[in-house]
Length: 281
Image 1 (spheres, rainbow, N blue to C red):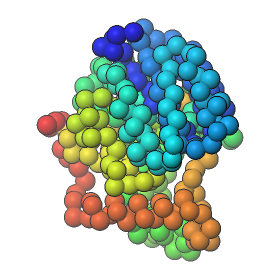
Image 2 (cartoon, one colour):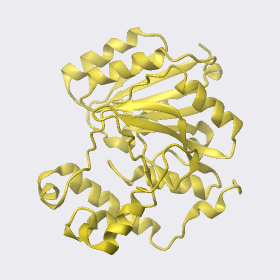
Image 3 (cartoon, rainbow, N blue to C red):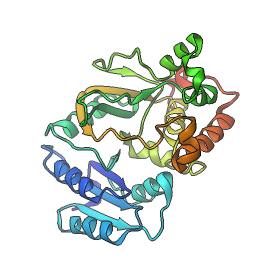
């Protein structure tokens, strides 16, 4: 396939979910689209059995698998996958995503092509475990609230109200709308915009690269849009969930805090960049 003919490059970064990744890829290949697609799987697991399962995907058309010799982290792992992408659009997709509706990819690419002002588009996401809509939309992070939501402070009326707004609990997840940022469990992004921003920010290891990217997309004058007319499914397991006790028990939660501090420092004196939408540079 000529590289110039590829419309969508789907990057899947795996960590110990090889079986689910294989289901993910099979559901991608079952998508009904009128354009060429490539799938790029990157493995951060450093596990021989996991790698062996993933390597079987190399036998499928337009699928390539890259096994890392060490865990590069979320940011560098996705950036590594994107280096191989040749499509007009890059999709960053979590390993646990399943595409059940066969027109999901076509809908999202069509919408991006009709709306050149959109830089990042995200679908509705359903948690397999309980059938609920995943809250993938957030307000731009505030470090105090990220800490407060994991402590007794969350129960205070004022803090409870602020946390609810930060988590966008009031959002109508049935409406297509502009949002501050979307969790990168599923993004459609323009390849030229991704390249112009040099991909995800390597200052972060595991978390906070998604609000940072959305912030920079808004700064460029593009929009970040939630698009519920397309739906995907996920296992609903979050690496960062937990409270104060978990902070001392879970490396992922401690890393989330470190990355949140970096984000807060970087954007401390900046305003909300959404006012720049429509003035792309």
